[in-house]
Image 1 (cartoon, rainbow, N blue to C red):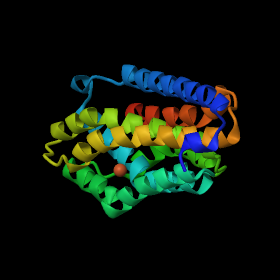
Image 2: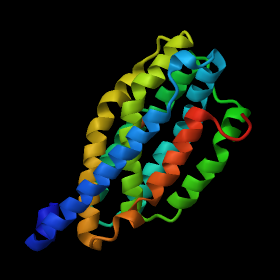
Image 3: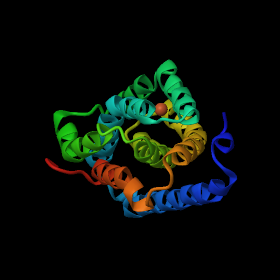
Amino acid sequence: MTTEDRQPYGLVTPTLSRTASIQAHIERAIQELFASFPNPDRLSAEEQRAIIARYTAVLEGNFIYWMTAAYLSVTSGEANAIIRDNLLEEVRDNHPGMLRRFAVAARAIPTDRDAHAVSRHLHGVREFVGRLSGARLVIMMAFFEGFIQRFMPYLEELAKRQGSTETQYTDVHGVCDVAHTQELFHALEAELALMGVPPTAALLEGVGLLAALIQTIVHGGEGR
Ligand SMILES: [Fe+2]
């Protein structure tokens, strides 16, 4: 069943325009993040290592769990199928293992200190994820996929400076997350068609929490 099958014609335009405004918000949030990121030339070797380590600490054990939460919380068949495909690819292609190899090659395996630096904001995102709020979670994950895809050149540059030549993780995520982000917006359209169109601000809570976590990945947090 497609999105159009489920909704009266009169609802198509408002739902799509709501998705467009959410996409625009996510695009701005990603641009704001990148505008704040330091030029790798101005980072010490330890600061470069720590960014890779904190990224790994957040992504390796949480990405599939958060996508699983989105899978469990959506109600439309279309969103369910889209997120299932995303999860299948993550699990089948062992993306956590890919990221671990990337971190090992860059000599950036997360330490206790790296994990502690992101722990407060990571806790905030986990609390939000635990509420299993379908559309809000899909929006957060679309933001996450969009950010990850755009972050790959930066992450790969840091790893090269650490002496790494391992690029499978950054190669795969620089490409596949473009399609994943678009698919998640289709999933969101299907969810919004079922739930009506709540105010945009109410849907963006997860984006704010995840953006704060990403800031601590790049800039460090507690225990720096
Ligand atoms: Fe992945």
